[in-house]
Length: 251
Length: 381
Image 1 (cartoon, rainbow over the protein chains, first blue to last red):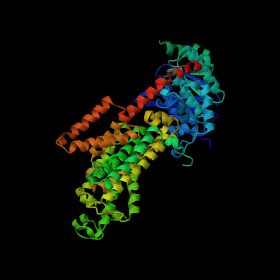
Image 2 (image 1 turned 45 degrees about the horizontal axis):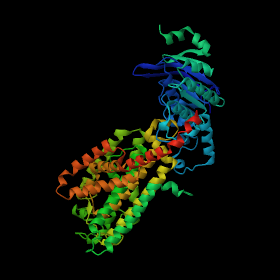
Image 3 (image 1 turned 30 degrees about the horizontal axis):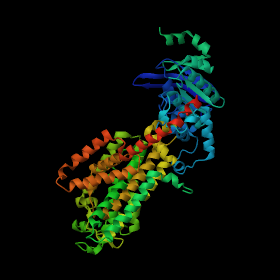
């Protein structure tokens, strides 16, 4: 049943969140269409991470509407687990993989399947699962590291593993927070390729500071500032906007 | 469980443990019952009862390791579940006394007659049947753990806050059981047991049988723990322990996983308590004392958390040391030794005995594999 009439995959309208009087989000509104990839940029404190928190149910908005899947689900009424089950996957700013588990087990835990206690207790390995894990390992280029403990991976490899875990969940919408922070230029370009590949059949939102990376993605850009949308358009349009230049370079 | 691969259940150290446990269960009773008292091989009945007690402690340690070592839930009130299982068994044993009590009342246990109670409280009904008592041994601790866990985990109480409320829980139960009008014998608890399933609890053969039953129960608990931690469920537990929020974002109901393992662990602790009571001959409210639960956590820390076999070893080592220290002139210093041990393990051996051994083995194996593994990164780049 549609709660809101919209064709958007994700619909945010008039979202406000404040922490102890500080307005992290201020009447934030934007929509993401199905199959789109969107880059979100903005200076520190613009509300990028808070926006992710609202979408994934970690933070409840004080005001406003968040709808997912052509207006079918009201995300402000669901918790993290329910939202994850709907098919919204999130990659955190700081790579958080399960350090004590192997690369393979990390992906296994992320694979889309029954998350109930019962299913986990009576779980059995299957060739279908192995095939899926192999596919993902190929995409994220970690095939040779499958038996390694995730804690021993390099920073870039951890980022890719986490993107792989996101893929394993087969989400409809991926939220990717600063995927190339701390990566070398070559790794950054590979990550852009990886995300473009993923975008072929998934909707993706990428939060990133790295302009070269955003340019490489070549998608519509939304610039946030002080909790609301400052500018929206192609990277060239946005970076030519006088107000964007001002918030980025200072007065 | 269908085609459950045995190799998954029993890795090397688990297999060694099962063999040692089986040998223990055979050798100790044999040496007690068959070796003549004059021979050097004879094991005294005192030792049989003592070992039986250790086995029950090991089961308690195992139940703590399951939640602490794998799910990161540090319960400082697990003694409460142990004591509840013990009380359930104690109630059965009390009702077996019948007319042989001091007041010879066929229905009421002595302490109730002494308190001038006219009839048996409803919650004592059914305890004359062993099957009912056996059910209660699981149900009483399990239900408490379920209700407690349901509230605590749903409200996302974790870490030190959870530890503190588990302490409060066992302390509250202790105060309750101390009261005469609670109906569990007040501060004297339940004692003067006569027989269990028709066998005299004091008899040598019964003591040996109880030791063997305890060993079998420990083996079953161990296998259940292994089945749990080697399943995907176990992987999820470790994920929760290391990155709870991340696990939640992957779509796992963290509270359901914690609740299941916490309740399972409480049931195991209950069984341990139930087997403990006939072997020591008494259950009283001091079993709920917060210090007992903390001591049990120390056993696990010493043996090595997250290893299962370590918990059992830790329970044996620490309790043997306790027996050794508290039976001689060193008795007043036992608590200092225990405290010192905990500090020493935390500082010098944070992985515990078995954990350190496994870490050392893994490192040695890794070093031997290096020449082969060194080629792998090139293929990746």
